[in-house]
Image (cartoon, rainbow, N blue to C red; front, side, top):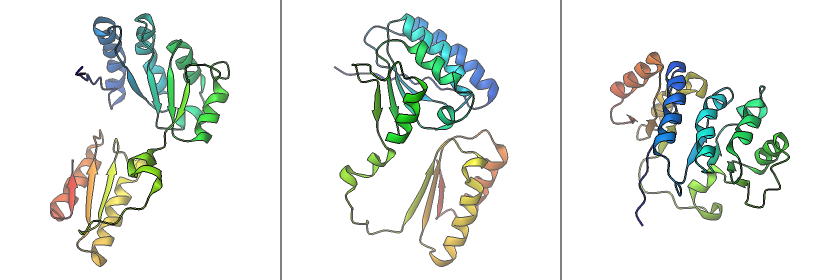
Length: 207
């Protein structure tokens, strides 16, 4: 059968995240149905607490979520109670996807009573799977080298440094391209990206 996908954003600013915490929980309470598959990208550190209302509603609806951890922050940094509460709220049948065996083991240490779940509580899936099966080498396409940066764009993720580095690269490799993708709540950062695109329209693209 054909499946449909509904995306419930988590918000970008603090006010937006607080609002989405309530709105998403209410949306799931009203619209979630038996048999739905729920995938959640777990936010880092304190953002984990804002997921708890939605996770509680899913448990009430009898739905076990897939929880994909893209960040070590909520696992390695205090307060870790948020992760423990998340595991407790999700109930039976929950699945967690971690990026590496080390990340899995560290996460398992925070919730030792759940790691023996016969339903396959923990799974490891590296982001490297995006680059082809088995780590096989692929021949480079016959075109200018293209660099990419995709994320929720922040200063801490080095976007200003990336723009500066790419400017230097263009001196020696003028055919190179850079694609930056993702939202940002930092107006100065967005302005810097737009300025770079205007200065190098054939080399830099923002999506």
